[in-house]
Length: 103
Image (tube, rainbow, N blue to C red):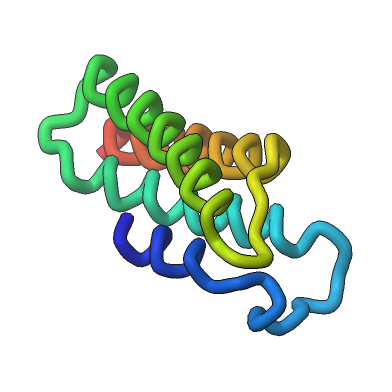
């Protein structure tokens, strides 16, 4: 979480372009996918209640992250960035929850 907030504190004009449209949305998705994976790994045994808590907490953190960016020079909040965060958190949490329960 500290790493995500640290990356969010970097002004946009200092971040190199990735070379394709909506690259920032892909980056948001992967950041929160990793967060979802790590969160699922931290709960053992993992049940449906914990999964809900992980996803809900990720959504709240994503909203906080977007709010935090509004205070950074050359950054702005974006509903679409937050949706990318949420999809990354949701899909990775469910995927790793299901794969950990199959073992």
